[in-house]
Length: 340
View 1 (cartoon, rainbow, N blue to C red):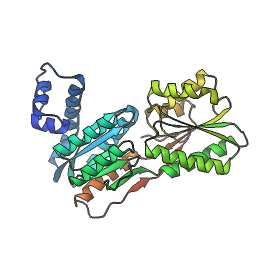
View 2: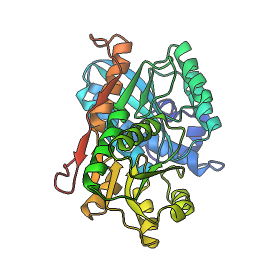
View 3: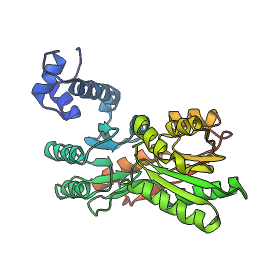
View 4: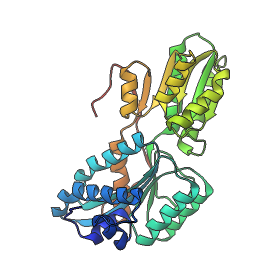
């Protein structure tokens, strides 16, 4: 493998040891596919950031720990790459650890590795569970600032939450469902990818309260699980099919919408209205096809810019004091799909 970066720099970007990176670079044996992929990803990140090196400013490494389906994590990476050139006061070098599902132990060990090697900031999208809270507090104790992204974690260890206002999103979804259904009655399905993601929980609670107030005649069915991943999500929907004979609407507070729709179609169920989150590639295709009615979209580029600003202000490289901030929700229909 040819490259133009010192092994030490590649190792730092990948979060691996020098010997491990040397084995990958020189194509030696006893290297797992996952490790090789991490080195390749680090090289790609270094190449993408190389243009910044001529800029004046401090070089800073920021780590992203993201538990999410790949369709969403790709959008996060792309947004980070797009906003970095806008930051002129420092050379920002993001490092990503991304998995569709991370066990509690994997999250804790990942954060421990970051704490050991050092970081100027850690952005986390993870479940709100005690072990994650403790790990975040450990980073804070080590002087490493933490920002939570899209879904918050109940701890004073983080310096900011960045993302959409989840409660407002849930109330907006309830308004859209109630308005679209008119006087029709039946079942409204609310789905979450995991009941330990605080953001999805906040959306679901706000949605339920608002819809029960405006349309108490509708029956709500709340299901959770699947992580937005095809096979697991399909099983969750199949397990609930017997309760959906009079399905009228779906509010997907998590993801996996193509799988949800396909399983409903297979059982002869077609909701009158379907509200989803995030204008990623999969959802863009679904709303163009007419299978989604509304997408609650927020600007990930604005989110990522806020993440970097929070870190830079923590390190006193920016003047103003950053506080937790949320981005506005845009209601996307088949007639106002933005080019992003």
